[in-house]
Image (cartoon, rainbow, N blue to C red; front, side, top):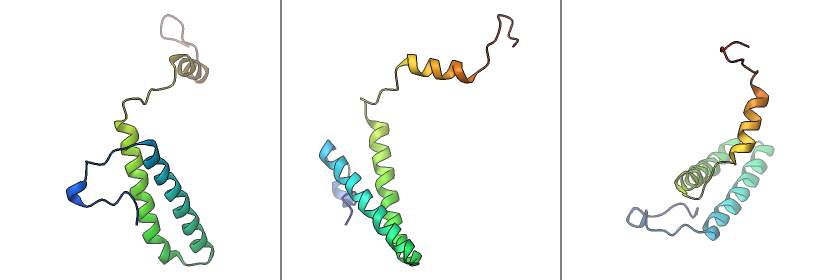
Length: 96
């Protein structure tokens, strides 16, 4: 059973730590391997349950990442360099 599945009365009370996240990532790796194996054997119907668990895990991890206060965007130097390289130069009058 997925570690993301938690009874309703316990939801929101779990401590999120690096170990929990790593367990989810490991579980996702195993789910992907199972899905791939079933698909190669032509047993797509059996994949559905694993795909649903994988989806739930990914959404859960994304929710954790979005809520994490220590998620900082890349430094402004790298984003400004990428932006200026992909947009044409504009003169002072708004013309190219």
